[in-house]
Structure formats: structure tokens, C-alpha cells
Length: 255
Image (cartoon, rainbow, N blue to C red; front, top):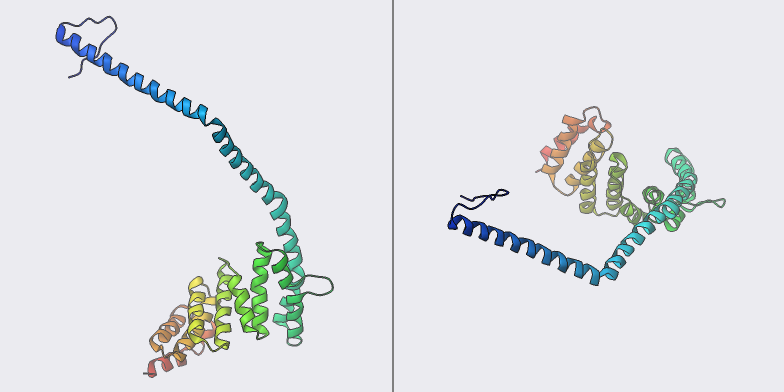
């Protein structure tokens, strides 16, 4: 068992004296090693001081630059883009509810007028802003309604959102565009992505229904039946549920 040396304590015998000497020697070696390590560290820091300060300076300048860019460039850019979005969005909303002149309203929304930006201008002039992202969604839907399906796919693919409704609608819009291009396999994938994006009473039954109909077209009747039955079980009050029994029957009857 180790013996600890108290102040003024004298060894009782030579064995204890030898133990104390060894302990003091070990302690001295440890402190010597620590002193040597500290000296090497100080020497390295002194030798590389300019490099270290340079790295710290670069990091500091980068951080200050980022904060300045965010405050004085990105925020004003976002604000300007949001203001510009108001004009074309009015035309888009009118087109979605109008029974006449839909095409002209969609074109005004896309291309602007009276010196005001349209969605396409906002996308080009304010890349990376929230307004440009939303403009891609609205532009995609406008092109979809104008039956310009390749353009619809291009813009809806550039849109991204975690929003429960908009995210699902964008994926569903892509599905609609691919269906119109006679590409049901691609359409089914987007419809499935649309109802998987979020669960709600509006988009989920809508795209479950479209996915089921598309699956039947692809002779994937088991999958179609699964989607139709989910509408019946989980969304019985949805519009899609009114005739769902007929679709369930069709999916079951086809071999």
C-alpha cells in the first residue's frame, strides 16, 4: 500500500526512505515532462503565430461578411421579391377562380404587365429567395393549366416546401403533367409522393384517388385497391369517397 509523506514526517526505515525517494523522483519526472510539453507548445505557437492569427482573421472576416450579406443584401432582396410577387399572384388567383379569360390571366401572371414583374421575372431576378421559390410553384401550376406540360414539370421540380398542402400539391401537379404526357409510371410515383407528403383531409384523399386510378391503368390492381380502401376507411367524408365503392369493385373484379 502506498505511503503518503506528511509535512515533517521522517521515514521509519531505509525501505520507506527508498519509497519516498522513488515517489519524489517520479513526481519530478512528471512535472519535468509537463514543463517540457508546455515549452514545446509555446515554441510551436510562437513559431506559427502569424499563421494562427491569419486563420482566425479569415474566420472572423468570413463570419462578418456572412452576417453583413444576410443583413444588407439577402434581407432587402427577400423583401423586394416578396413585394414583386404580390402583382402576379393576384392574376394567378383570379385565373384559378375565373370561368372566362383564364389563359390571358395566367399569361399575365407568368409574364407580368404594366411594368410589373410576372412569376418568370421574379424567378430570374431574385434567385434563392422565398418569393422565387413560391413563384416556381405558381408558374408551374399556371403552365399546367395552359397545357404546357414540360414547362410545368420544369418549374414544379424547382419548387420545394415542407408545407403540408403546397408540398403535396406540387408533387400532385407533377403527376398530372406526366399523365398528360402519357407517362403514367412517372405520374404514379408523384401521386404516391403527394399523398405521402402529409396526411390531411384535402390533398391525401385527392391523390390517393388519382394514384389508384393510375395504378389500375398500369394493371397494378392490388395497389389500386389498397389506395381506394384507404379513402373509404380514413376519408369517408371526402368528395373522392362518394363513388369509391364502385372503384373498389372495379379493382377487385379485374384479374
